[in-house]
Structures are given as structure tokens and as C-alpha cells.
Amino acid sequence: MNKAVKKQTPAGASAFCVSHRVAEDWSLKHLFRAGSIFGTCCLLALLSGGFPAQGEVNVTQHHNHRSRDGLYIDPAFTNTLAAGLTRDKAFDGAIKGDVYAQPLYIEGGPGGRAVVIAVTESDDVFALDAVDGSVVWQTNVATSVPASALICGNISPYGITGTPVVDLPSRALFFDALTRDPVTFTVEHLIFSLNVDTGILNPGWPVNVNSNAVFGDNVFSSLSQGERGALTVIGTNLYVPYGGLWGDCETYNGWVVGVPLNSPSNVMAWATTANKGGIWSVGGVASDGVDPFVATGNTDGAGSTWGGGEAILHLSPSLVLTGTTNYWAPTNWSKLDGADQDIGGSGPLLVDVPGATPSNLVVALGKDGNVYLLNRTNLGGVSLPVAQAHVASSSIIQAAATYQSTKGTYVVFANSGNLYALRIGASNPPTISNVWNAAETGNGSPFVTSTDGTNNVVVWGIGAGSGGDQQIHGFDGDTGAIVFTNGSANAMAGTSSFITGIAARGHIYVAAANQVYAFSLPVQPVTSITLTNPAILPGGAFQFSFTNVPGALFNAFGATNLAEPFTNWLWLGSATEVSLGQYQFTDTQAPGNSERFYQVVWP
View 1 (cartoon, rainbow, N blue to C red):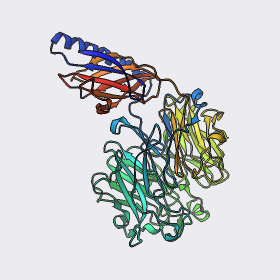
View 2 (view 1 turned 135 degrees about the horizontal axis):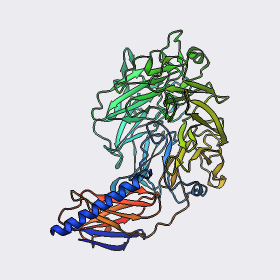
View 3 (view 1 turned 45 degrees about the vertical axis):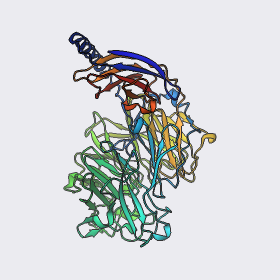
View 4 (view 1 turned 180 degrees about the vertical axis):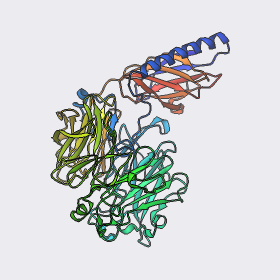
């Protein structure tokens, strides 16, 4: 039996309820199955149009993907609507502490509530309601470290600096925190794992890097190591990069520490053989989905023997570096060492250029002002790159982004208050062309939105840092023409250098000192939800569809009693947007021979 009931949700938004019961009559079951076949065919036809189906939207790591592309696909972000972005001043967003890390956005929590995760230098972690900015949970994991307790550095207190990562299958949040024991005053890097829905510490964590990270004769020392770069999860392993502290004091190395998610005591590690060579770029560890890639900085005292610095490294999952195919350093690496011109000021950016030879690239940007294109499948050791160009007159320190439009493949980076867009030509070898530049009036790291991965591409910059205008700026991805500037009335405060924003569900979120800011596209009114194509699928799952505004979050709830208070309804999941404004929900746990009512709720 199927029936529909229109109700009002507690928030006053129109919702639609449908109930279904699998009938025992064979002919009725057959009719339902015929309907499900028809619905499945329609779904396949819609998917073939090239629209990326969207169910839950999650920003689990820095720049959204392991490639560090910084691309956010959101059908709500048309150029027209992007021009009307406004700061949501009703969004609370209050946190405690300075922020250098990118926020994360996670759906699928209790009751379907979406949260924004922010971490601070006070060693505090906050989960904020993504709609109103109220605190869902917060926790202080340790005592942060005052600058007076460190040999050098420019952050005080020093706590959680690098962007965390969320492993969705385990619903675990991972981050590194610099801590100070309140009794012994021992300074230690600890890697934490929290339940992302509750903030509760997961069993077996934290991992003490000091007592676990060893590479040959080299033993990790927290007192001189910083953790600025973003973490990532590849398969079942967590990877954490380390460099030095501001001022390059004492002895430190570039480290990558690997921790198996299910066996955190079995720590893996790799380090530069030469002193220094820190892995300190904002983007941290990138990946092709199989292996980690990192960029190292200048080494000290290496002489004529390359010791792992000034390089792009392609490590194995077990953190082994083998052969010249798996690393690249410029032929003038020793000169760059002496001039403090790190290759590692910007992390590796993994870019695919269809039609180019080679087509699978790593893009590196150096403090020498150069961009380098490398063959990802054979980095080449100490050698000339596939292509290079001098693109900046000063050091490039930030996290670049990449995107494709109908006009080609782009890389965009920040330098000296401006954004620069380069087009990578599909040739043999690939070429580098400077296409446009525009003022972001600060030194934030760019990120990109697109409605489908190719069209309506907007490049976003942040006027971050002490000399920035503390505003968001948006530019057309092909021309650099201004799409959006928010003006001083909507300015932020306390954004740190190299910070970047995220986009999710028609919003942009930026984390700054003591505050997470939310910006919203012009409100598109959510219409009444009308059920279409109800169907029982093979195996008993129940599916229905509806049409509404693109890019919205619709949560489905179920109950066996229509009179049940809504607070007792079971959250079943979020609807998938299978084409622009066309949503579909499948209840795979539909009861086989009992009635269940469904209610779809926004937001």
C-alpha cells in the first residue's frame, strides 16, 4: 500500500509523507516491480546526461579532494547567484582561538544534522550547526603550547594548525595537536581521533609522535617540529606531514608519519636524510588515491649530495621512497637551498590534462617564482621538469587550485595580493600560459566552485592576513572578470595568511580567529514536495522522487505511526540529486511487511 500525506514540519517548511506496505497479493507486487523497473530506467537516462549525482555533501579534507584541486561542485553556484552572495549575520559561528586550518563540512550525523568542523590553536575542536552556527559539540583535547616554551615560531599558543581529515566510513576526525603536559611541561605532538558526530575520543588514540616516529637513526623531536600541512586518509592509513617552526631553528627534518586507522600503535615514518627539508605547505599530503605525494623545503648542509629537500616525493603506502621515478628535484636544488627558495612553499597539486603528453601531472610552485610541470608516473629524479615557467616575482607560498572549463585546464595560485590563472595546454609537452590575474587584496589560498565541474566556474579568493581586506572575492574562471565582492560591510576579521574557504549547499564557510563565517547565495524558495515515481525495488527497498530547488539538502525520516511526534521519527538519510533539481531517495531498510511513513524535511 502506498499513500501520501502532506504535513507541516516543526520548522514550518512544507513536507511530504508517504507510506508503503509490501502487499501479499502477487499481482500487486508485480505492478510495483514494473514501476520500479521504469523508475530505474529513468534514473539511468538522467545520469547519462553528465550531471554528477549528489547525495550527502561532505568536505572531509583540505581543498575538498586528495588531489588538492580545491574544486567544489554545487549546482546552486551559478555565476548569477554567486554575484548575490551575502554574509549570513544570523549565523552564530563563535569559537575560541586562532585558526590556520580550513573548516570541514560533514553531513549524515544524528538526525541528519550537517555540521561545520573548526579546530583552533587553543587545542579546541568545534562542531557547529551548518544552518545557524550554534555549537553541536566542542572539546578541548589538551593544553596548547605558549611561544615561550618553543625554540622559535610565530604562533602563540601553538595547538592544532594543520587542516584535519574525516574518514567517513568510520565517522572519525583526525588531527595533530601540539601539546604541553601541565605537570612535566613536556612538549609533544599527539595525533587524535574523535568521533565526528560526538567529539568523543576513539579507543587507541592519541598517538604520541615523539615516542613512535623513527626513521633509521632519526628520532622525531616535537620541540623543533611544526605541523602546518593538511592531513589525508588513503585507504586504511592516515598520513601526517611535519616541517620546522617559523625561524628554521635547531635541528628538524621533513617527516611523513603514517598511522593505520585500525592499528594506531603500528606507526610508519619517513624523513629527509639531510637536516631540515620540512614538509610545511598548507596543502600537506596529496594523493592519487593510492600513494602519498609531498613537497619538501630547503635542506641545510647537504653539500653536493641530495638529501630529500627541494623536491616532490611520491612515497609508497608504507612510506618507502624508491628509484628516480618517485621523486623530482630541480637540477639547481643546491642553489635553491642556499637561497632559501623552497619548492615546498606550495604543496603538490595533482592535475590531469586530457590530450597532453604526459597527461597525468604534478604541478609544483616554488619560492623561486617558478611553476613546474612533472610527469606523475615518472618524476625523473634530479632532472629538468616536463615544462616550467617563471610566473611570479616573489615567493609563492599558498595552496593552489585547479579546474577545467570548456576552454581547458587551469591552475590558479595566489601571490602578493593577486590571483593568477594559468592554462595548461594539451600538447606534447604540455604548455603553460598566463591567462588572467585579479586582485584578492590579501594572501588567502584560492578555491573554486562550479555547477557541474565544467560550467559556471568561479574562482574565489580571500583578502586574508594582517594586510588583507578580510573580504571574499569571486572571479570568472575563464576571464578573471569580477563576479562577486562583498564590501567592507560584510568583511570578516582575524583571517590568517594562506587560509582558504569551502563551499557546500549554497554556502561558503571561512574559519578565522574566534569565529566561523558563513556566506549564503540568494535564497531560492523551497517549494512543496510532491512525490513522484513511488516504487518497490527488487529486494524490497522503497524509492520515491521529487522536484525542488537545486543544491538543497533534503533529509528523509521514517516512522511506523503517523501520529508519532516528529522528534521520535528515524532519520533515514538524505535524498540524492540525480539531475538538476531532481531528487531521489531509496530506503534500503524498508520493512518488508509493515507500514512505514516517510517525511522529507528541509533544511
